[in-house]
Length: 418
Ligand SMILES: Cc1cc2nc3c(=O)[nH]c(=O)nc-3n(C[C@H](O)[C@H](O)[C@H](O)COP(=O)(O)OP(=O)(O)OC[C@H]3O[C@@H](n4cnc5c(N)ncnc54)[C@H](O)[C@@H]3O)c2cc1C
Image: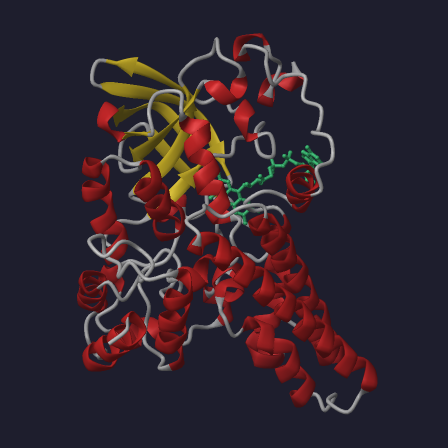
């Protein structure tokens, strides 16, 4: 029996919507069917991306709840699998796979987003630990997080890319203060995080001292990889906590739009169907312009599918995600905007309403308010275009006079203003 059939049989046999959520995630993790592309001895089945995609599709078509998602599964796990020590993988993977520990990403700072390597948060060695001081921002889900992947500067005399280290930090400590930020959706997806003498044990340094940029490239390539979900991750709800639901069915029950955040809607595989559904609901399916717009969405999705296959072929040859992940990220932003614009046009004047007054309790409106974020998160559209220009089209590299200058001599990040 092939791995796809094996996983499908297991899922059919074990899925029980009345099972407590934590129990289901534990069982799913131990079976390897939750993250099929992870190694067989590490909560996966060692499946190829193609096989993993088939298993995930099969699971979703049967309405079976997937494993926990979020920063731990999307970014922490693949980064640790690529650069972590055996001890680090042993320590952190179980909590990610079973959803017992929630993660956030502490990369961006008030003065360092696109130019991430200019970050100023510092990590000073003190015996068998590092002491962290600085400020992060845009930290999605930090208010729920137990752990974080953290970038901090460990050598100020090296040029900016060469003095950064990558850590796993415990968020539940005194030196970590999380302040949620309210978005225009009304929700609070991200936060400011203030680090004041926060401690990280030296064994949580990932990939070696001052090797953080190399490790970060792995993390970012996974973040920009819109096909990530197909590799076996997606399914469970963002920032899931198994202790929050007695049964899987309760956890999966539809929620009111005020309780949803835009990320959840954006990650919903059914989101691209919204405009066609609205066209039917508002009697627009015979309208030539409406049909053309729906076709444009279909074509873009098809292009994304083909781009995903290209990424898959690359991975099948044992490579990390490459520049095609930047193409995928750009297309994802574009598709989001199209779904919003076409969907709201189908609703006509009703598109202006919110909440219970709006069609489908305003699900498209919440989605639409969130969509601009997708052109920024994980590297802006402009930055993705720079990557494509340089790595695919072979255009000259963007000038960066600060690249070879010791960090200490730079006016970077928030220091730019001084
Ligand atoms: C929904 C959301 C979730 C996020 N979650 C996280 C998270 O969990 N953890 C985390 O660490 N970060 C997170 N981020 C932060 C995100 O990675 C940064 O916002 C992003 O990298 C841009 O950085 P910035 O906001 O500092 O903008 P800036 O870098 O200041 O950019 C401002 C503008 O200048 C343009 N620009 C900058 N440099 C160039 C260039 N070289 N060429 C052309 N144009 C340029 C940009 O495209 C942009 O339009 C999140 C952001 C969003 C929107």
